Amino acid sequence: MRMWNVDPKTMCRMHLLGEHLEMHMFAGCIRTGRPLSGYIKAGLVEPAKVKLRHDALAEEMLRRGYAHCSPLECILNRLSGGCVDPENSRKVLHDRCPRCRQLQDEKGRNYANL
Image (cartoon, rainbow, N blue to C red; front, side, top):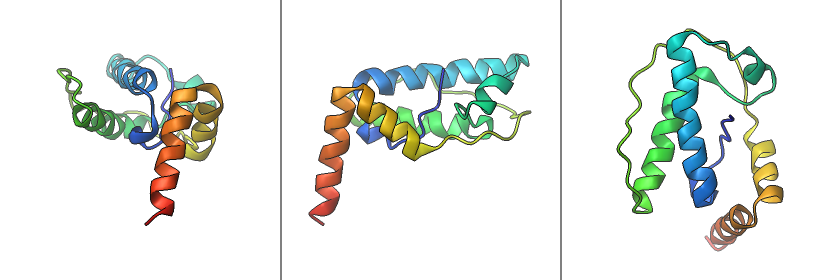
């Protein structure tokens, strides 16, 4: 599980939907008191931002015409800390996934033309 913390528009379908699912999994861990310390130490989640991230992912899903029927209930974040490096996540996605790389490159070209 991980929070990528990159612009959802630059994520392929698989990574977008996968991270959405993982935000629900993190929320479940927070709700039930399961420890996330390993994820926090590894820079894979920022517990206080799980709901915000979920909502950003859901917004992108809807923009693409995907169904979204799983709102994330407001969770009381009993955990704090954690820092996900979006630039590192962007590089990992760029290197790992050809479709994410294509979306990132397209977005970069669009910004360069402004």
